[in-house]
Length: 349
Image (cartoon, rainbow, N blue to C red; front, side, top):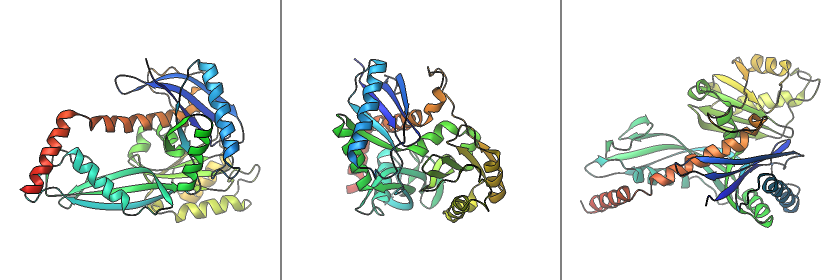
């Protein structure tokens, strides 16, 4: 019997939810979709846990009724003004005499690099590995199997207020479900909107929502920086930067973000039809090519007619699947035995 679960994204003008189950090949099977128009959940749950609980209960009850699926586990997209990205690095000694790097070495190195800079009042949302190094040679995507004495890593730590995570988890739990994980909504959405060329290049992803604007800086598809701004940059009838203080403030914050000078293109999403004035002003300010991003479906996905609008929840599914595959690779019995033996040898020889 397949174990069903749900994915929800409550942060925009509409709430999206999807029921799914895991397939034997590590992929997922879509079980049904549901969306409803509402005011969204404010970035920091400022209206309290009770309204959030009621919204989660209403959305998931409707999803269960529509799809005929029952589920207990819930994954959710998260968007908070408290989200930060901090670069970090670490290195570990593989062996005094050098040996092949294992997946366990890589994981240990990432863990060390991720712990060092996280304050107690923040929770780690994602650990984005930008690249490894072996014996000083940088920018190695996958060092597993290469010989090395010392392994290093550069990792971007995505953190969020611990209070925000606790309140969101409490809201889901009080609705009668098990909070099983959170994914940064804008990051998940970008995976479904950016094309292959965008993912290779250094790209700014702007998701302009009703109550906030989410900005991601991506390098080779990996998150370099992120900021979620409490500003309406698309005030009707005022798209000229000189007439719209919010628009001017937005670009001032954008250009002050770490990594801005490296970006090479901008993709705008979050609106069905961004005004030409907005795109023109964005291109004028940045000096970069600007285009509108549209959600895409995966091959053989059985989506509803408006399935493209579910980019955020589908992106969350993609992210969870990727994490599960990474975890499953660590459960291989032979790899476990090999890693344990190499650790003993390193310790005594």
